Image (cartoon, rainbow, N blue to C red):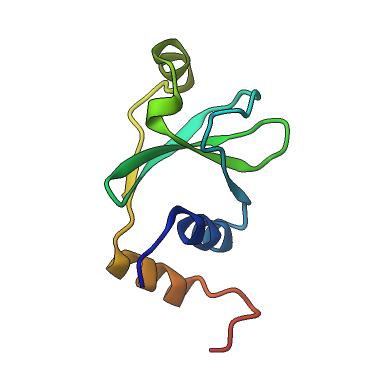
Length: 101
C-alpha cells in the first residue's frame, strides 16, 4: 500500500488531534507559522498553522513565493520524511478509537 498525501494527512490528524488540510493550489489566504516540512513520494510540503481555523494547512513548497516563505519561517524547521515503514509505525502508535486493535 502506497502512502498518499491524503492518508498521510489523516495519520497526522490522528496523531496530533489537529486537523490537517491539503491546500494543493495554495488558495488558503490566511496567515500562520510554518511548523514543519513533510517529504512524501519525492514531493516536499510545508505544514503551517492557519490562525483563523486552527487547522494545519499542507501546501506543496513550490506553491509558495519566496517572500511569503521567508516571512513564514523564522528558524530552521524539522522535516518529517514519511516512508511506508514510518507510516505503518505512525498508524500503529496513533490508532484512532474507531480502529479495531
